[in-house]
Image 1 (cartoon, one colour):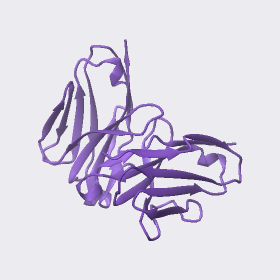
Image 2 (cartoon, chains in turn purple, green):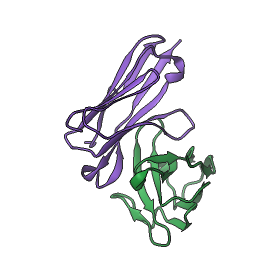
Image 3 (tube, one colour):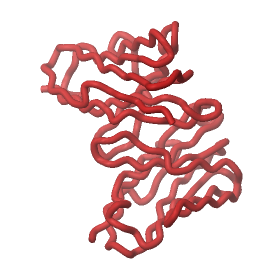
Image 4 (cartoon, helix red, strand yellow):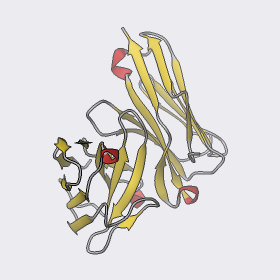
Length: 112
Length: 115
């Protein structure tokens, strides 16, 4: 069982639709990060959230850190084909041995 | 942010051979890490590459199988030794670039196929 559980594992939607990816844990994290990875590339950091209840927006992407700092969500509004990729959440803190631990990933496919 | 170059980007190897992956960072970084990833899946930390001392390996990974060098603050290598088909994977180098080095920048990865 992974420390961070992501759901769903795979999401296929049409361009213009909205989607939400969840990242859940029973452990508390000092910070939580979201990365996006495209085929043939390494993961690229999208955002870091550190405060319980924090909401950050990056254009059409909205990230939320749970009040208890155990979970997070990524919401994409009006998805575009360029949003296609593997989305990874990663938590940092004592629960992860003061290292970065990754969730299982969510593959998102946005069809034109 | 730091730019990380890895080579080779991909290789096809024979069972029983060893391959060394190189990772070059364009600036000095304190922390460097090596990850393994099956295509489309999550990342598993292999080890932390420590400058001037032995790497710190995660559970399930050993130095004899994955020797790591870190001669300075901009360069590291990972060797996959005595390869078997189970070692076929993407190997990613990363550098810690945030406060506390807990924000990572990744190289593009090295995709190894072992026949």
